[in-house]
Length: 116
Length: 115
Image 1 (spheres, rainbow over the protein chains, first blue to last red):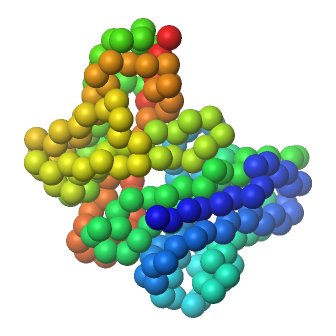
Image 2: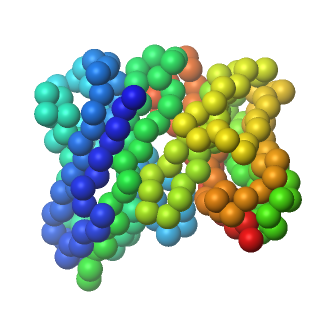
């Protein structure tokens, strides 16, 4: 079974600054996907960024980037130029590759507050 | 496309009552699933389906039933509601073929309170 751990229950950052959210996971799989989801107060689950485990290059989506360390089983999210709209819960999630690997395993979440 | 829709948005039940949470998707996705989210926790998988007529249990299936008679719909039934089932419920879907097999699409959630 896989486990995902987010060790920072809450974080805050000043608007326009950079913040990094941590995530570690445990798995015996070699091929898998990792995700960061954002959940604003509206409750909607929004996919922020995804990373395939076989890719060494870290994924980037505009102001969002990840630091994927496969050997260390670490998958942190960096948010640059933080905006007030980034205030939300952020969940790290794991999924095995293949049709059998459809289940998402989530971490407990990090509540991020962006301060003006 | 409406994506993944869920009804109702909010529901209050008394202990012992039964109800069905509805989920529908219009993307022709084979895979559909139900998660629950409890305060301070991530989502946990209740049941899932890889196609019409096929369902299986997830991590926390007790107290819930599902069926999948069509590709579009995947209702979640609470047989006899208990206060421990107070939670926010999310439905999700994804394709199992093509280029985006890893991307799950979530509905807006249903907040259920059991008194």
